Length: 348
Image 1 (cartoon, rainbow, N blue to C red):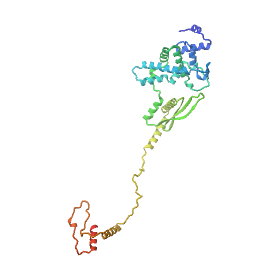
Image 2: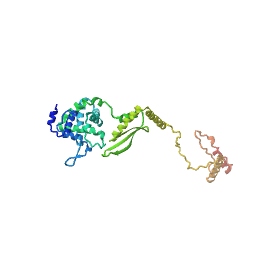
Image 3: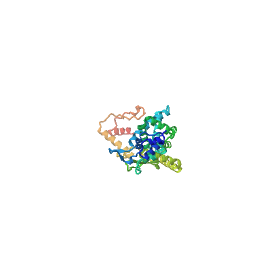
């Protein structure tokens, strides 16, 4: 271990840099070789410094590099630690270890936040500042000491002392999924409503979402992405459902009212018969119909030539043929008698 005399032999022009050197030793577990990399990793973009070429000087580039290195290192550790686990489980565990909330807590616990240089006036992503600086420090370690030192830092300093990897792996942190699962099991309607969307002074977008359960307002969340704001809203909604009996009672009362309205029968069933009211009909009395038919038959007989004096009777359904129905007409009958007899036989 290096002592103060060794630190003094390293040319650090200012006392503040000596203090930074010692602080980084406590945080990282080793002494930096190129202190400028670590100073850059702790420089937030709100400082708005520029180099001789006019380009901005901040930790964004080191943050990008550290993010990639962190994914590789943590992926390696998770792969070796959980032997035989499937790809989905490994991916989910790695995501939990490198997500912003985890890195923010690490930065706070390790004392990184107090070393960050910022203007103090910008509120843009302030809740991410510690996590971003943590990633930038990993990028600085990679450039200063290489991949193996990054692996040692994560294994010895982080996963051995600050994070229980097994608890993280089996802990459910997706509050939106838990809320959706609860609503589906209880057949409760769930929606996420965008309340507002705006931009902060630094140009960073912000979203405010609210969870709506059966038309009732649940929790509300504000974040720098839709996913983050919905996660916060889901977490607050779950907390209300667990802690406020009157809220969960109101949710199920609203559900009962909705299902009651949906299941209420419709008594007035529409008629499917087609009305033929466009056809004009004339109702003729039965007596007139009986009088009209002999007249029509007589008129028809007058227009036609005389036929043989044999009367043909229409067969009705299921009637047998009877020879007695046919009779000869005497020659002494007149023409009028023949017509009358034919009419009587036809309408008997």
